Length: 185
Length: 135
Image (cartoon, helix red, strand yellow):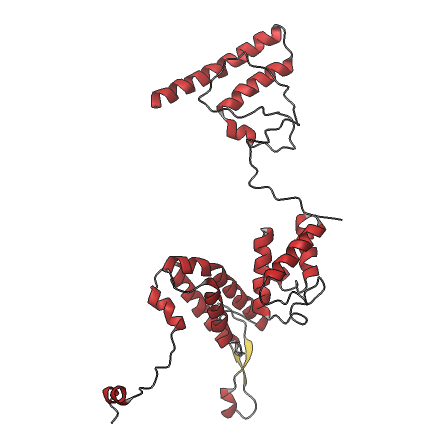
């Protein structure tokens, strides 16, 4: 197993060293500079796929082709794809665990009201966007803390105490979340 | 250590002093009611977030909702306390309890004691009274 890995790495290193030579030869020969760039980048990407794929989608300078494991080591004579390719971005094999769904004010309102309706101390009939937690819905300060914690869990960011004590209506919460997530409608 | 002094109204001192007891004392942690309130709410948040893991770690025969109700009850026991230093002391005790619970220094019976009635029932029936010493 270790021998195989070492062979693979040596092959990879060889490909790295030969790649510029091949690139130079190709540049001198027939193909375009972009193709050679793509080829070297392709080989580089095959060696360390994870780091190359961690480039943000907005940075369209390098087009990643697709992930291949280290086990496949194909020859240099692959089909060359253009370096900058925004459309065929590796959609199927990359998962964005850190991305959030796109938010709108309407969606935020729906989520906030849903969370409040699911809370058993709130009467869903009395609940509206402008209803006050303490005065209209009859919650006390510990219930308010629970509501703010539910909002933190729902939207995935911490709400500090100084801000939390001012959020006394669902409308305040919606406005606060929209401010934090930079959503303007 | 804070050098600031706060004004605390002590009802028990009223009998000793001529006027309603107001004296200057050194604070324990909080300087005013707002700060004390923040400490209490943060303690509540910390306990609330820890409850699912407590139920899991200690294999408590209680559900999450029962634990939350008990937590609310424990906080409501002291809801009428006005003295800031007493509030601070209760918060510190609550933090100590939380630390012990999180680090699993307590055992299951220690946590189930929260649900135990603190008043022992009076013996009923002849035998129980006899065993207890009554004739």
